[in-house]
Image (cartoon, rainbow over all chains, first blue to last red; front, side, top):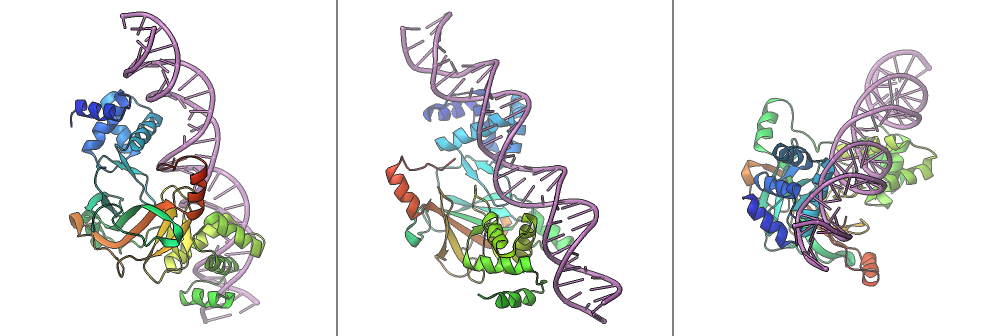
Length: 151
Length: 151
DNA sequence: CACGCAGTCTGGAACGAGTCAAGAAAACTG
DNA sequence: CAGTTTTCTTGACTCGTTCCAGACTGCGTG
């Protein structure tokens, strides 16, 4: 997606159009499920120098505006993705933390009715599948036993 | 559950029976979904003094042995529970972090088949429902608008 | 098209949860 | 019980993330 389109996206959410924002959003399109460090590196490669703080701020602004979704798999730093319109879930590799999309097994969001437990008001059902990515499956066939729950 | 029973549990998993372990496990039975701090406090009230580190170590040992399950809701410290035999899920309050059990919507574990996405080997489907607990619903009716995604 | 200010960015300090390391102190083994 | 192995204590430290104060800037207004 061209930077122009990203600009339109930002404007449409009444967010100021700044270089860091354009860069973050644009880089994120090409690298779904990146963590802050990866994003920072990409943004810096493009703009020269951007503070880590700015990246955090931008990501928060984008997330608040609904342009970006934050994923926080237990035991791994947060990831971000731009695929935000639909209701999909994620597979996370126990060993290397790789993340991939999984289309919703059931239907529309929240895709599972929690049977209104204990008076809670539920507005989102988050599903995370845990397992091993292809690459790590290979590795564990060779060296050593399957990792246990890890840490 | 009496400490004797807890002792048996530990032995059965070939874990050494130490005061901190008995205390942690036993307190956890009465307080499901406690975080480390709560557990430490309870254990100290019972034993006098136990280092935080010991609590972490004990919890890890128990988790590795499968006597305890660790829950890590994004943005909240880890919680622990002793209900491990069945396959159930959790509701988490966006505002106060309260956790409650939800019986599995579908069937046995993993209760949702990830349609074997991108070659991942899936061994667990984790479901977290996000919402507001009864108490926080009240509070938000009064003071101020519903919290957005929080943070 | 200069002005002004809310909204952004920089750099650095600070924080909470959790981990690592080394030695002292217990729990099983025979 | 003496020996061996595991666990607990203490304290320093990492990592991801947030907070703060001040400098800077995109952009609606006059």
